[in-house]
Length: 344
Ligand code: KG4
Ligand code: ZN
Image (cartoon, rainbow, N blue to C red; front, side):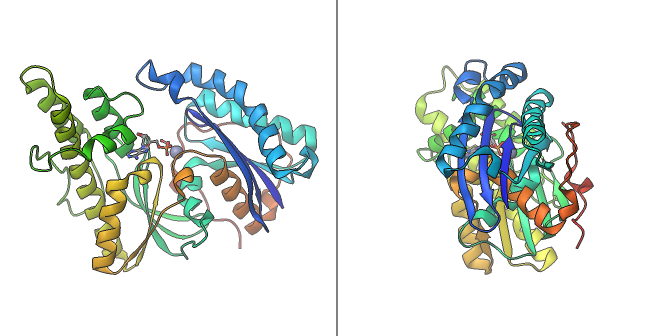
């Protein structure tokens, strides 16, 4: 079965064709980062309008790369939520319009389920069950994953998401948007002893996180800094921030593994691309004998492949989901725990 995936929940338009037998056929992405950069963050209305411009050309591109015509698509999966309402509506209407025109079933997918399952797209995928550390711009969660649709939330952030803390701290340091990759690069040149920033909730006996205090600590350092923050100081603060963030994410992941007795950790979401986090988790894995799985770098951040893939898995397990109902609604707020397991 060939599934078209459509992702438009935030500032990336992603389309992909996934063959449930042959694997990923093609995928294409347009990132709106350059457009939003001048505003220091995503402007929802501009995001929606740009998704409209990009969706169909990207569809043509993935069809061309896979050497397929539209009629070869068997089903269409689109991100139904969570995300920006207007942006989601564009993907949903494109998917449902195409479904109606082609007389093919359409299926709404939870964006975080896409991220959660994205490491299964890799050549050496993890087996179930595993612990998933989901760290994106909007979410920070630790989940136990027993199978497709069988997700148990162990803990989550009580305030800012990890990616949000990266972006806000980078902004305070004048590093532009999105700040994650920039602050990570800057941290490489920083002195780890210069600033010891707080590690919020490191010793709380649960799997929850809190990052707004860490961001405020960056703000306080910047505010109290005499004169302009020079490049070396920026690097030192970035280093202090990244070290604190990584310490907390690693410690909580370790306790989730210990608590469940599992030895596979999957890292998904944009912050999963962070090299310091990867290095620290790999080192902990060697020491404590667990294995860490990451999606391919290009599938860490938002993309259409993970949506096509999740759609394919869902349809394979429950063919009754393949309905030709083209009246769509999006779910900007949609707790992952509300997702049911597919019927056996
Ligand atoms: O998963 P994603 O593409 O979108 C959401 O669903 O939110 O994640 C985007 C987030 C942004 O906050 C971005 O700054 C962060 O992931 N990010 C990184 C890195 N690459 C992306 N954070 C730290 N280090 C990186 N290398
Ligand atoms: Zn995402």
